[in-house]
Length: 314
Ligand SMILES: [Zn+2]
Image 1 (cartoon, rainbow, N blue to C red):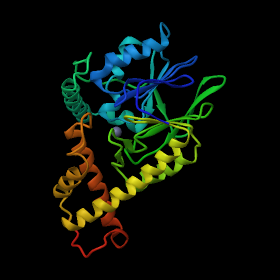
Image 2: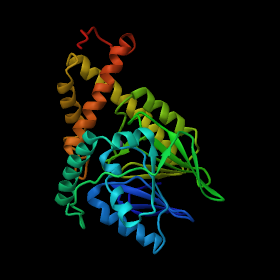
Image 3: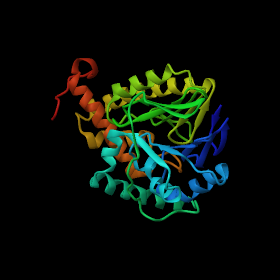
């Protein structure tokens, strides 16, 4: 099944907030929130979490990566639940401590708020993004014991970003992969999400393919269950390959001009997509990053990837 709504998914697992920008809640003796969503949706997340937990409190919040739409409400959660322990990778923490990253997150969060306004989403939290600190540094393969029969294991899955951690709950076969898998857009388009390294992204997908998950929580829009889990991981691999081939062809035709190639990729995949969709500046940042990643890869492996004679520009 492909679930595109908020609410209960399976035993103890909930999609909270907005299907387009969810946080996930795993209820139990030590409830866990996965990811920190958009700043603008802080109040919606709070309401959704309280609807499940009542007067109980979440114990942990584990971050997959440091992007603005995955960390936005963390400081709001920490203000409501001061005992909440925030965890993520060391490199995620390092990025989120930089002023330049904080300024970028603030700027993109503001644009996100404007888009939610345009879609008449409310209530909206219009306070700017606030930075926060970590309580736990998560290392690859680390297992966090939630109770005698419930654990969360961190799975290092770089490729979207270098700081990326997926979270695997083996007892329930739940995988919080966020953008380690492709985004399943509203119109069914499969948006590959390798931003920093194509090969690492592909290897991460192959790694999570071996986990035998029956619930797969993606970063936006969809949760997959049963046979749709493997189908989406396979579709993510195929979409990444198709994106690579198409973008390599554009780069060859445009003689390595990044701006022109980004323009062509955007025209092919974003311009005609209906709202809600990723805000334009975030999409452009990501697309530029994907194109540059592919261009760098072509320069490292020219005989493998460049199918026409091309003057490689620095
Ligand atoms: Zn991201």
